[in-house]
Length: 220
Image (cartoon, rainbow, N blue to C red; front, side, top):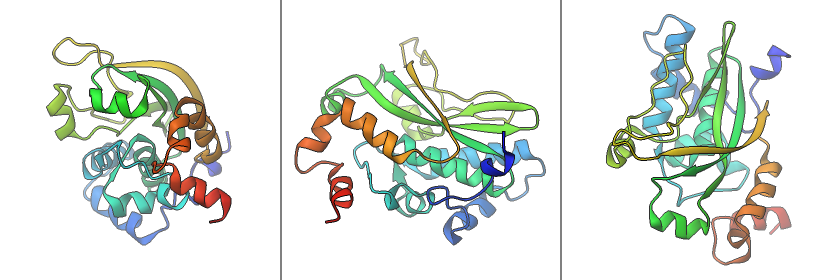
């Protein structure tokens, strides 16, 4: 593993942007260890950025960490990008990881929008802390979790923080289906390829969340 590759800023993980730097500084204030800094950044991304799957911005610019901070709402992938960037900013190596999942508590409206129960390319962060490699997803903010009766994920820098198989009321919650691998930077083209396979209507119908991507790709 090239540690330097897991620490550098990239186009998507733009922690050298002033907005990201300010966000990180505020979140880690008073933290004295890497585990504490990681935990505070996780909570800040989880709750500062509201989870909203209906506003899926798919342009390259719109998926940067700084753009997510500006919008203050995002689906799981931009939130993972922001967390990965924020952790790198304080010297904690990260990779981005992706899986296909089924959210058994998803609303009928969302399932109708997706036209499938599969949530493709769900994002999480691989966090390197000392000799531990942990997984954490900041996707669902605490308010949303309370609404669905699911405890919000907590990350302590010592254990994984991945979405639970069962909610607090004994109902099935998150089922991990397909491992899409981990990446040193956000694999934009790969996500679009997968989404075109799983959600072709996003790209065929108009208007769609993917419209900006098509315009960018064609140079319009």
